[in-house]
Image 1: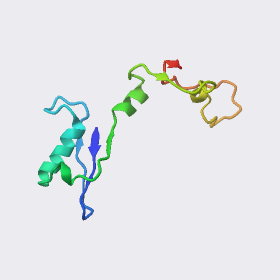
Image 2: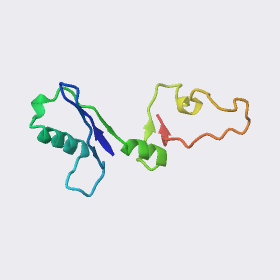
Image 3: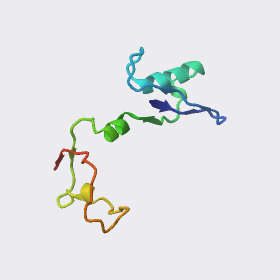
Length: 108
């Protein structure tokens, strides 16, 4: 889903939710939502002070591990940062630690 929040000068909120990837008649959910908000309130782009948007596409790709192949680019000596993480584990002294799959294919 793509959520776009519009807040008017008097504090009223409008939050349209559109499918991020949809067979509907729009190419870009965020632009479509913004356009719908503007049209429904008789406003135009010059009336917009700020845009904030959220989408579940990258979150779902991360959780399902089905996104594009990526590389982790980092300063020399820090290539194991994502594997070390913060060392916060429920069983700190457990010997058989099972780490989640890496989200990157390569470290540069």
